[in-house]
Structures are given as C-alpha cells and as structure tokens.
Image (cartoon, rainbow, N blue to C red):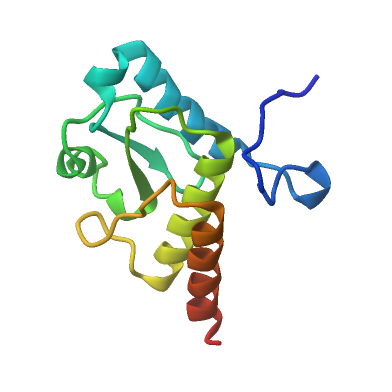
Length: 141
C-alpha cells in the first residue's frame, strides 16, 4: 500500500506516470515537518536543517544558523540542501521542487554553503520559470 498525501494544486509530478515524487523529496518534507511539529512552530521556525541532495537524508539536527548546519557536514556542505524551517508545513511537492532546483544549481557549480540559497515557496508559476531558466543555463540554450 502506497502513501497517500495531497499534492499542491498545479503539481506537475503528482502522478506516478509522470515520475511521481522521489523518496528524497518525501524525506526532506518529513524532516522539515517533524521539526516544525516536534519543536513547536515558534521554536523551530527560522532555524535550519541539512539534507543530502542525493537522497534527502538528514542528521536530524535543528541548527540555529545555516553556517552552523554547514559546519557540521564534515566538508560535504556542497552536497547538502539547507532548508530554513518555515512557520507552515512543507508539502512533498515543495520539497521536490526545492531539491530539483538545488541539484540544478549544484550542477552549475553555483550551490555552495555560503554563496546562494534556494528560495522556496514561490508561486507555482515563479518556480516553473526559475527551473526553466536553470535548465537553459545547464543546457546552454
């Protein structure tokens, strides 16, 4: 039996026939939401989690600052996704888009611990345009 969760409206990956969401996206969403619920919204919001770009796994630590999260990744911070915990839950759809965008930036060599941060929770249209521009940069179009 598969997991049941609601997709964001306009989610382009909602159907398994279209690829579905990866386990990595589900892990990032779960990690964010567990910290949000487990620590209480006000205590967790604004703090950071670190998840691997490859599979979404985390060290399950809630960090006070992004720099602290990066420093604890044993020189692997370029292979990590750093997520600032928001006051609202993160859907699997949002996590999938965040991971996809961070991976593209990593492929471009632009995703480093201190240089750039992927900004989540844009509208679906803005997020689609951001991803399209990144893909154009990668493929030289």
